Length: 510
Image (tube, rainbow, N blue to C red; front, side, top):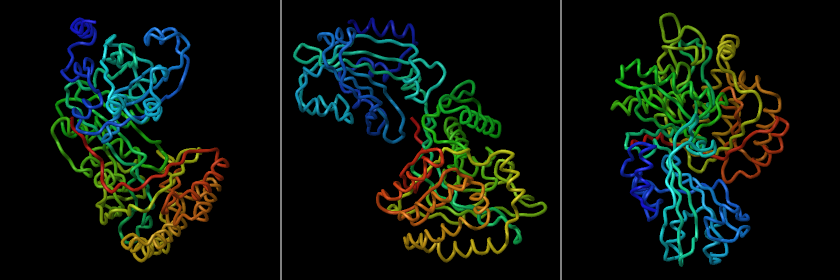
């Protein structure tokens, strides 16, 4: 087909194309290689579907094979390994009768881009473009890019010809907004564990004081580009509302000259004890500021978005990652705080200063268990809990401080997991963490005990839960097995083996 005519028709529907978009649609070379050069990062494959099936009449016609012949049907996402962003959604059909055994084996492995398979097998091939189009796509395609609503996509269909026969038929799809030439900011932010609040007694004139840890997974990925109005796509309704509120707050504080269109490309559960609200707010704020040439610290962004009014762990996780202790707030008349309140009810309170930040040992693994029970306290319920249960007994605060100084921190510094873990286990029974644990179903305590009995050095509840964590070494198979035995009694749930992230949010400007 005449490519000039294809592009002319496509631009009539989609508008002017950028040079990179035209290259991706019209290239006769490796799309993977082009993407790696354009983004400066390796491209990886995530396989969504890999099946062997009988060719439908339509597929048979595309491949010039008899209807019903076995074909490999593969759907993959080509992703930027640095940002986790999906760059291309690709669907392919390959007649198995035209493949060598080694080619078929590589194809079925599902983790190698087709262009690289062709290169490895040194096949003489050519690409024959069949069609280019622009328009909407089914929800699964939009979901791969973290998009909702009715976004438009560009696509091309082409055949790879070998020995004058179609070897593979491929369709590659990407949003019109991608590779558009506009500046885009991508924020990759960590989740966090909140291990406890130090002083919810206040007798020395200070309260709060958080202890926590940034996590490598799960993570949050938010991208943004300039726009005349604020718009948020992807994620759930709560996540979209939090991004929108944070962006408007920052825009008003700084009197920015424009707005932004945000896309939530990856998220983790909200109200689960993983700190999603803070990461969403700071990611939106950071992306918006970068779009308009401004840079602010994580504490500045937290202040502008109303985060960090009780704990500074989420803010510090975004800023630098690692293991964190913050110094809390002054307490009393005309000071930072005059009452025991959560961050959501502490608007205008400055985020606390970090008094200690250390890398967390790479060898220590973290098992997350998120039971399918009601989410942790938030909003008015969280505020009432603080008011009802504080101040906590002073002797418990004293023991918490003693544990931190003689067990928790020395265990971290010397990488003595047993010493570190013994302090965390005892902390579950003290201060406000004792209150948070008492609010959980009784089987949550059984879950933590079972993971300790299976070899975890420590197990505890993150914030108000329901996320439970266990810290240990190695692959932690016994800990996982113990958790899986208990989880059905809590209605099921999700598990994830992860590790600490010893760096803050990653910001990519492209």
